[in-house]
Image (cartoon, rainbow, N blue to C red; front, side, top):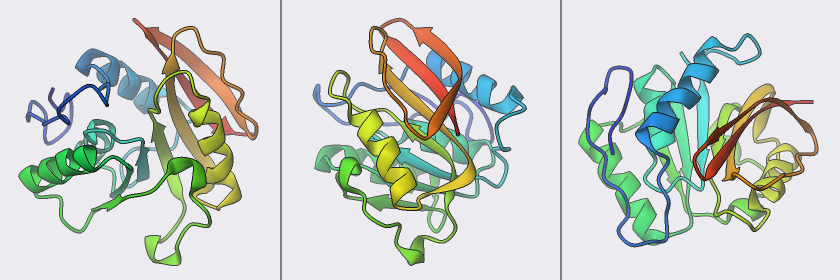
Length: 186
């Protein structure tokens, strides 16, 4: 696994060991960022405040930082995954522009004031088949975690049809066993 674009292009990333995470493929990640970078409904990545939720290795947030995002919050409950994120942040020396939260993403609560402004680009890659993406999208709005012009990129199983109250699907892409929805506030 590697970063596919930006200033850290081709830098290797470590993934958590075991089968508890399912990293987004390099090809799918590259395609996702192509959609984001060329969509007129998406705020610019340059200077964006990013949240990578159900972060796993942190690859999506690290890709955003590589492409010019100003800050990334990684939300991950699993200790092994947080360790992989920490290793990747350390390797890329991204101190001060990243933060790791150990939290259940379906119970985020109110955004802490010390996290600054709301997030403009949110990646969600929850375990498939449990409806966690829908629950988390609701909590992001309820807790004032996201800006009014925020874009959320939700990865689900290819057969899933998630309900996304408060969000409008702009684009839907299928990458093998995964479906990615690009959502705007609505």
